[in-house]
Each structure stands twice: as C-alpha cells, then as structure tokens.
Image (tube, rainbow, N blue to C red; front, top):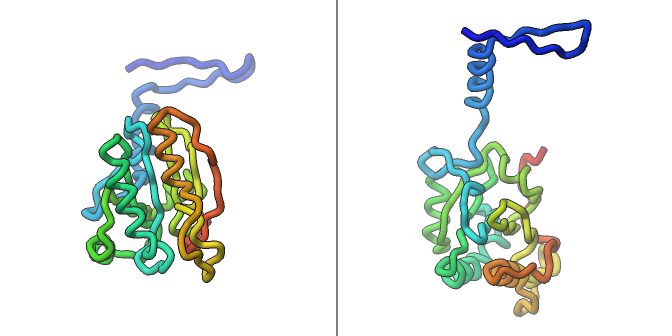
Length: 197
C-alpha cells in the first residue's frame, strides 16, 4: 500500500493513503446523478455525442406552446437528422411519468431521443427556463444557439399567423455547414419550468 507525503506548506505535512483516496473519489462520483434518464430509468448522456450538432429541445406534456410546435420539431428532425444532427426532447418536469411521456411522444409524433431531466442537470447546464426552449451544441460541447424555435409567438397568448424567422433551423443549418449561426441567443416564450432552483 503506497503512502504519499504531500506538503501543503512548510509547517504542515499531510499524508494520504492513495487506495483510500481513490475509493473515496469513486464513492463520491457514484452518487452523482446522470445527465438524464430514458423512459426505462437508464442513464443517458446527450453531451457525450460526437455529432456535428446536438439539439436539445425542452418540452412538457401539458404545455400548449410546446405541443403546438410538435409538427415543426418533427419536420426539423426529418430535415436535419439525415445530415448528422442528433435531436433530444428533454422533459424537465419531475411530475411527468414515463408512461405520460410515451403517450405524449406518440400523440404528437415527436422523433429523436428522449431524456427525463428529473434532477435538472440539463436545465442547469443550459440555463433554460421555459418550454419549448432549444439549445444547440457543437461537436466540442459548446453552446452555439439557445432560445426559441422561431418567432411565431410574440407573447404567451399572442401568435403570428406564420413565423418570419426560423432561428433554430438557421442555427442547425449553419452549424452543419461549418458556419457560425446568424443568431446565438433569443428569448423563448412558453411555459415556465417548475421547481427551478
């Protein structure tokens, strides 16, 4: 058993038992929550992707704004997934059961991966506050876009007949073409995420 003497300063030497230190570190890491859970309760890690673009869209089963964007999200998946973008629908509401999420995905034809963010690890990493809100990550794990899907909503109860700006699509398209997105941050309008710290 190796013992290493580390001197913090000239007056105070400290000794560490390396196997014990390694065991303590492993125990601490073991209790860290995963980035998210799939619908079977298994850990998922959206950030451990080597995709050119990783798209996280935070949604809720009972948010009317999220639900109205479901067809748009399906079209974006169909358009960009074949080009290498990876899509995740992240459910941050702790009260939404896997069964409710399965039904929601089926009813609204949501495509791509799913993560339940019961510990708000993804919410905290991305600083989102409403649903729907999108975050696009580049290959190095850097955020290249955060915000609305498009500008159809001007306020929670004010909707344009059609969007005139397609911020999420523009960001994904630019990233896949190895360009900087035209906009990196917009204000998303939707349902507030409950239990935010």
